[in-house]
Image (cartoon, rainbow, N blue to C red; front, side, top):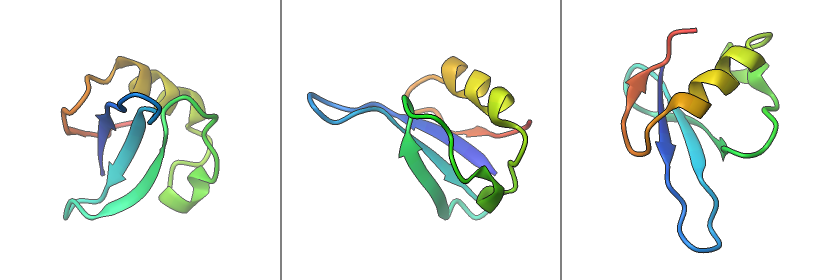
Length: 67
Protein backbone atom coordinates (compact mmCIF):
# COMPACT_ATOMS: atom_id res chain seq x y z
CA UNK A 1 0.00 0.00 0.00
CA UNK A 2 1.17 3.53 -0.79
CA UNK A 3 0.32 6.92 0.70
CA UNK A 4 0.53 10.45 -0.71
CA UNK A 5 -0.36 13.83 0.75
CA UNK A 6 -2.01 16.25 -1.70
CA UNK A 7 -1.78 19.99 -1.03
CA UNK A 8 -5.06 21.87 -1.18
CA UNK A 9 -5.46 25.37 -2.60
CA UNK A 10 -7.49 28.31 -1.29
CA UNK A 11 -10.64 26.77 0.24
CA UNK A 12 -9.77 23.20 -0.75
CA UNK A 13 -8.17 21.33 2.18
CA UNK A 14 -5.17 18.99 2.13
CA UNK A 15 -6.04 15.37 1.34
CA UNK A 16 -4.48 11.96 1.85
CA UNK A 17 -4.63 9.22 -0.77
CA UNK A 18 -4.10 5.53 -0.06
CA UNK A 19 -3.25 3.40 -3.09
CA UNK A 20 -2.80 -0.35 -3.46
CA UNK A 21 0.22 -2.13 -4.95
CA UNK A 22 -1.08 -1.41 -8.48
CA UNK A 23 -1.43 2.32 -7.58
CA UNK A 24 -5.24 2.11 -7.73
CA UNK A 25 -6.89 4.65 -5.41
CA UNK A 26 -8.50 2.84 -2.45
CA UNK A 27 -9.05 5.74 -0.01
CA UNK A 28 -9.20 9.52 -0.19
CA UNK A 29 -9.77 11.58 2.96
CA UNK A 30 -9.02 14.98 4.48
CA UNK A 31 -5.72 15.25 6.30
CA UNK A 32 -7.21 17.31 9.13
CA UNK A 33 -10.17 15.07 9.96
CA UNK A 34 -10.21 12.17 12.39
CA UNK A 35 -9.51 8.86 10.70
CA UNK A 36 -12.65 6.76 10.19
CA UNK A 37 -13.46 3.38 8.69
CA UNK A 38 -9.84 2.20 8.69
CA UNK A 39 -11.05 -1.40 8.92
CA UNK A 40 -12.02 -1.10 5.24
CA UNK A 41 -8.36 -0.67 4.33
CA UNK A 42 -6.82 -3.22 6.71
CA UNK A 43 -5.58 -0.51 9.09
CA UNK A 44 -7.88 -1.15 12.05
CA UNK A 45 -6.21 -0.32 15.37
CA UNK A 46 -3.39 1.65 13.72
CA UNK A 47 -4.94 5.12 13.97
CA UNK A 48 -2.11 6.69 16.00
CA UNK A 49 0.61 5.22 13.78
CA UNK A 50 -1.16 6.42 10.63
CA UNK A 51 -1.69 9.90 12.10
CA UNK A 52 2.06 10.10 12.86
CA UNK A 53 2.91 9.05 9.29
CA UNK A 54 0.51 11.64 7.83
CA UNK A 55 2.04 14.39 9.95
CA UNK A 56 5.55 13.56 8.66
CA UNK A 57 4.58 13.26 4.97
CA UNK A 58 5.85 15.71 2.39
CA UNK A 59 3.31 17.02 -0.10
CA UNK A 60 3.22 15.25 -3.46
CA UNK A 61 5.68 12.49 -2.57
CA UNK A 62 4.34 8.96 -3.01
CA UNK A 63 5.70 6.64 -0.31
CA UNK A 64 5.15 3.02 0.67
CA UNK A 65 2.99 2.78 3.78
CA UNK A 66 4.70 0.56 6.34
CA UNK A 67 2.93 0.57 9.70
